[in-house]
Image 1: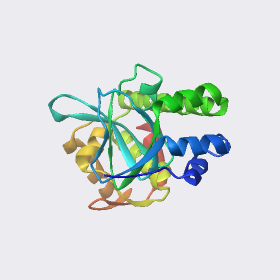
Image 2: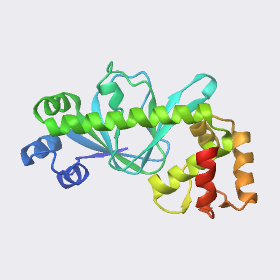
Image 3: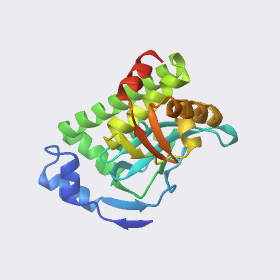
Length: 227
């Protein structure tokens, strides 16, 4: 891991019109940017909170560690997103882990400074609460989908998620293994591979290793709605 200082322009670009120039300079002095390689751990479940973190570049896997080396992936955090927010407003302990899915940069802002900014900067406090609410709604929707939807609907949701929200294109390379994708959906690797193969055979997608091309978004959306 390499460590540098979070750039002031970078901070302002991610969160425009939230911080004053003086606050940005203070954040620069009380922050650091850490470079992670793929699979490097950003923070570990059950450790104490020490910083406010946001993804400066790359993708981060946020996941709950379970027994027997089984994990449940909660979400994929991308550029500009905070990670670990529930712990900051909760009991100061991370209840899940995070690791880099690719070469990734994460900005760490001093926790005491974060609390000072929350008290003094209403825009920043409101923004954090909005992000926390968004995370809660995302996880609640994900839990509901896991309960109500069959596997084809879940796989359709996953493909649309990567296409529309992560990569913003219908052709992309999955940054995760088949096992990780199964963990994202709360299913087994074998069941996931079988369903993905069915999507390929039905010409909903084209598949070449981790390369995916969505051929029929109409069918994916239909499976997502009725799956």
